[in-house]
Image 1 (spheres, helix red, strand yellow):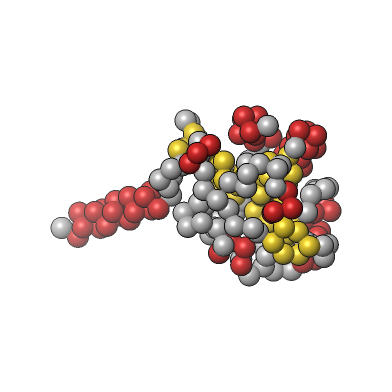
Image 2 (cartoon, one colour):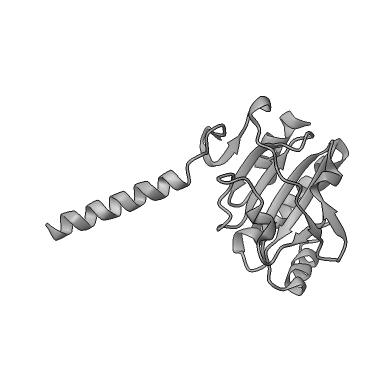
Length: 183
């Protein structure tokens, strides 16, 4: 009886976790990639105007990029998948910026120096908001992404609405598939 009860608890726990990570209403998981969600044009949720100070001390606001497609990439220097995807995000910025793409990082490091070192090491030419307390994350619509895990990426259309999200590391190829229809 105890072994059966234990298995039932484990199965219930796993089902609960699966439910927590499933796409929210209105967002559809991409075929073959349950970590990427996309929204059709008329169903896209609004994103608040994320704003703050970049790692190098400049003011950064999402609304400054209105009319552009924006890729928001949340990362931290201590995160191995973040280190792996950083060159992919930078190459995407370089390749797509002439077509109207802007990239904005969201750095969760507690130390500004660690974030700056990461930015320098990976030659990131886009601004990253320094958000050690997670205040910007708390402003995201509930269920949009799991803010407890890094990295994650949010693609914002030219009207400031969420077109796609990705939990986990991104690749240049995967980003191209999401960005192409928006350009």
